[in-house]
Image 1: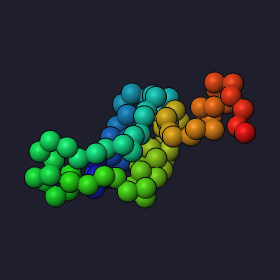
Image 2: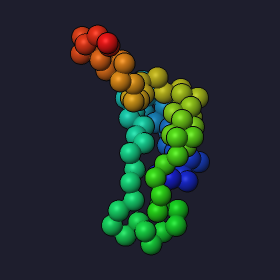
Image 3: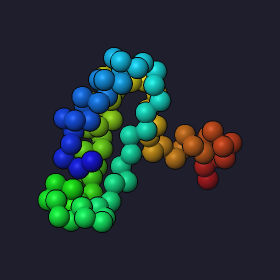
Length: 84
């Protein structure tokens, strides 16, 4: 969520400590305000690239090792498709 990096960091530490550092975590950047979000200033915007990258960094620092990230070259490799 936009502006919620401190909460995200706490969640990453909880997952790593209470579940397992090998827990698969998908850190998503596609939040788009809709519905009643426009009534809340903090939620009425998309994530910045910096927020997304900071969240990924926080997850790694919390010890999480199985992070799903947007990496299309890795996806292509897994699908056996060569980049042209």
